[in-house]
Image (cartoon, rainbow, N blue to C red; front, side, top):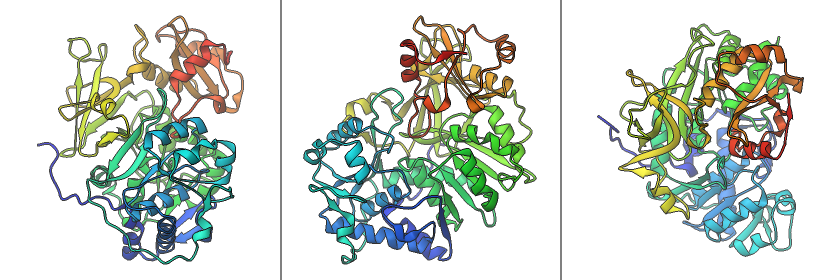
Length: 523
């Protein structure tokens, strides 16, 4: 049986906080930063106070002239108020379009044109430093959270307006637009409905169902990613206190977690990679963690082992959900301390029974296998309904309801999905670059990042970053590459210089282009 049908009335973004506050009025949200759009919340607020802030912002958006069905681009300096503004727009039936603060102004203006004269909510810093005057012609209106401009209005000017009641839109109406990672070029705009987001809620809620009692949930996820919606919905509707981080720096996180001692963590794989250092902190900031959760990509075995070892719980779990912005979580696997560091990090798990399904399609007529990976395709009710302004491009990735993930791999006889590479990252005759990276991480503790990309001559080039940017230990490296596919000499970069997406994925194609023009230095 596939995709067991259940009642799905949509996730209801605009009233999520209100519903959570009715169930758990004393529950709290903790922030590590101030919120430009809701400074009255400070660094700690009840869910009811946050719900009131959303109702207030929604009323201001309505007073500015935004109406149901209008698109509202939110592009502002990083902070959780991006999420609050999205919920506020959804509350009055408008469709929030969330663009990462990391995007440059030219890309934002391209996406705005694709959106079709939306309203723009931004701030003085972005307007002055990133955006050109053309945004005023590309927008129905421009609203500023902070700062001022003669052609824009401020949200503050609508303070005290009459509150408006929430407007419930049909579950199949667009309720949120997010952008894809942009690892292969200009991001695409993914259109979610209330129904598709609710479908993503179900498998993620199932993963966390075994948790009992009071949990303190810490989340460090991009504020423009759809994953944050479901992560917050699960936590708040269950009454879990939530700590929301904008700053994922290791020292900052160590200080924060040393006092709060969270029991559930949700973060990007590259954040966990950086947080390995927390395992050595004498304050034991990870000692209380029962569940580590990551919903983006496969994670390196070394990272899983170190983080699980840092917990002092009797049986901590690392939950890995393989998915994509367009389809949501599709495959799940959990890891315990029994997992060896040399375990196969490419095994990302199995589908959610009754909710998702996976198949691997041959690329060349031969059965998919470890030596001959095929295209990974997923079927799920959580699939987006289109790419805004690029419906034909969207349709090209769907075959009889199966979504082409853009990854290659195979399935074992037990049904486990093995992810070997992105289609665009394959290097002829090399095998899995991701598997090689896993092995290098396990063999060279000094590594903070390693990415294998094709060089100008087609040969595999390892780009390495070390902890503290110290010179690579060449003896350890030479021992580590023994038995691996042949590679060029390693090129060392500072980790901060690697091109990254909003979810901290490395832009491999861009990195390869930079190498071709001589960026980086031989280690």
